[in-house]
Image (cartoon, rainbow, N blue to C red; front, side, top):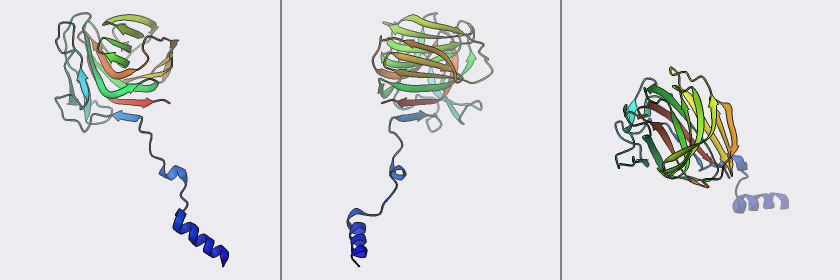
Length: 222
């Protein structure tokens, strides 16, 4: 009888036992942008375009419907198909300030004569200060830079055959000064740089490169 009463008291005051993992929510630091619920012909919410040095918008970025989308039906596209050699078309994402992160995106090179392909931005202070990794099918290489006052300095180069008919994926893992870059799940770079400590994420193309982006993923690391 005493055991029964104790069990009833525990049920009333403590409630039923539930496995901890059953109520553990998904980490709030994990964010994904598929662009599929965003309105076409405009930027997604909280995406802001940078500017060129002359004040013009840094590209023609908008959500478009595409049968080529990784996750149907939409992609985020940079559509400006002309530009000077050092015009960096870019968008930054608000509310993504992070120090250590795991960041990735799929990209499809669509066209470009002076430049082609695209890249990922992270730890961006603004549209003139950030880390960048990009893949260029015209040059057949992948590079990582830091950009200070709008001027790029290359940190590493890797020659790689980049098929313009296919989607590819860039991924960055940055913890402390350590920066790891992956291309199509293949490790490319492992280096240390301390130029930037934290900042926002974004997407990037150069000059006349028309590029589609899909499935942008961010995980902030503790």
